[in-house]
Image 1 (cartoon, rainbow, N blue to C red):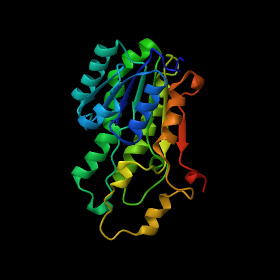
Image 2 (cartoon, helix red, strand yellow):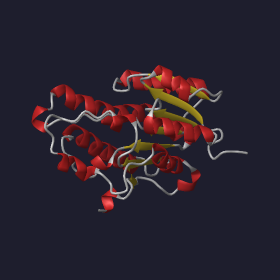
Image 3 (cartoon, rainbow, N blue to C red):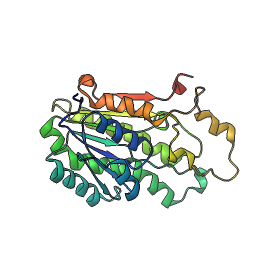
Image 4 (cartoon, one colour):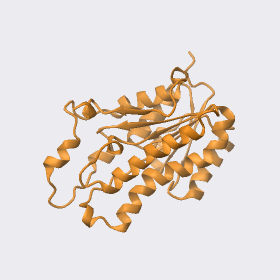
Length: 246
């Protein structure tokens, strides 16, 4: 049996857990050669242990590290067809108590790293007519309490996606962004709420249908990477269990 991604090479960030892990496993199961990136070496090794996989633990907020990831993938597999920027972080703070470090942390992981990786990968993606899928959030489409830095970063990632999609409109590659709602991932499960929060504000971000499994979002991302989505470019896909419809 052949897969949709036989012979294609995918770089997936955040591959050690949560959504990134689900995407890496989905692409691998469908025939892709997967190069995973994350911070947890043990989990990366457990997720990507097949003959057509490789991984690298790296701090993607460092431009040099992002470039090194792309170089390592090209050296291992000969090129890149797909880049999935799925790594993320969310610091919840009262805005007035958000430190410079909090602000820079969320922007560095959620916005700077996807830019650095995309910049390094673009020559290879253009050569092979590949595609990029960025993972933003419904926080990139609305406001969320105690999440000024996170919302700013995810709004920025949507803007970055649209800007690149327009710039490369006639160059053969595709660039899209997915905006998930709440998922049962370590990112959500390990939230630290600010002191004395107003939970009625926090609950405004919840979908009536509840949290999603990461595989439900991974299925959409996998579709966007596939030939079936050949006409999808510059799109903002919301996958949120109906939250934005309310």
